[in-house]
Image 1 (tube, rainbow, N blue to C red):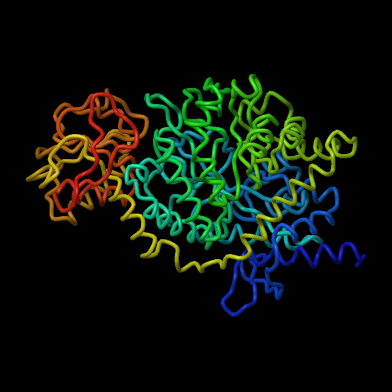
Image 2 (tube, rainbow, N blue to C red; image 1 turned 180 degrees about the horizontal axis):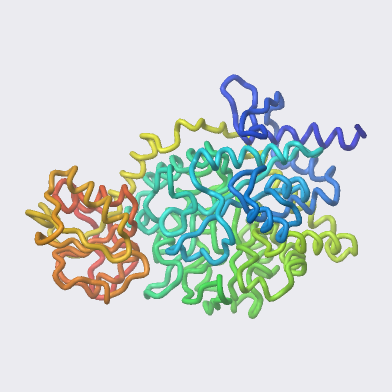
Length: 567
């Protein structure tokens, strides 16, 4: 083995421990079938120094690979259907996810899925998450592919696990309430504990990057596209919640990602389909949008996601994700952020105004370190390679980006990876229940006693799953649940409006943003989430077993912002 390659192998193998710290002092990483491959090399020393030493030894091909984080077709690293193989060949020129990792010497890969009520579904061309066991096997196979390469540099494996509407892995993991529900709870300690429990589950199945939490601050008027993905409309409340979520995730060994820099909350246009415009002046931006990102940076957040947003006061007409004025002058220089910057998905419409190769080069030159979901992996890789060879893309810029990515991997290596026994376990369920209960908000109705008495009939607009969970929880609380008659509890789900309200409802419950409640009659409650834990907490409030303690994190026209029922 040549001396240079031997040095790379020795240094890079140390990174493999991010796949799992073991109590007996030896590191384990998943083998090709998901089983462990032993490594005696342990993490230690300064992550930045180690990363710089390793990045300086990587070949040009390895440097290009480190900044790419595509998706892939197939639910297994090595065995995929013929349709998935065809999709992979068209996208990346290789048949399986493992082959794609090896071909491009990737720095990372994202796991995706989509559903009808997911506002980000349009960018997800496939789905490769089914269950915790399947994801654990898939991530093990992907890491084995990366570690089989001469450089032996493991992957960042990410997913969008925000909880609420944008949640990729919905089956088999404890589901936290949405960010807005946590904002309503208003207790950073509860938020941190909930996200630490969620992070432990993700780490256990091999996911080490979460593209969460959402750091966008909502405007004071309804109609924005972010909705309950945000913690609320108060910049300081959102900042405290974001920092708590970051601390929780990263304590569990999962790198958090705050998005969408410099803020998507005051827009009414969806950046998946067109370029939103931020008309705030610099002062308004600094006061209203940036505080959560500043708080996240202070909490040591692993990644900041650049948004496809036209920031008129900084670089008009240029998406922030392609603007050095936003990413270098504002984020790096003015705010002092030194971690990894990752693009929002490059297969979104604002990024596709350029061919995939050109977009990849522009994004790196603008200050992004990691390129997420290029629309063609083959073209993106070719564009970066040709720009590097021609001198348009300085090698120092790629080394800088790779160094940040490798340093993140070294920092993750210091956190032991939990076993699969934490998945869907009692600790996670308890944390989710506590978080959900803290956020239930009573906009109108008595604090004391049950909101409904006698038989209860649950009806739903938009969430039959939540309806079933609520009926189950009501029965467990001793209530009589009936199909006809009784007092109606009306659940209003994601994307539903005033036309979905029931004039006969004794209680109307908003399972997403609470704005619909301004048109409702009777008692009014918001859970901001349709998770099982939220429905259990709602049942306790409906039957008088618990008080609603939440306070709305957004103003609702015509309704008071209740500070919660004490006790």
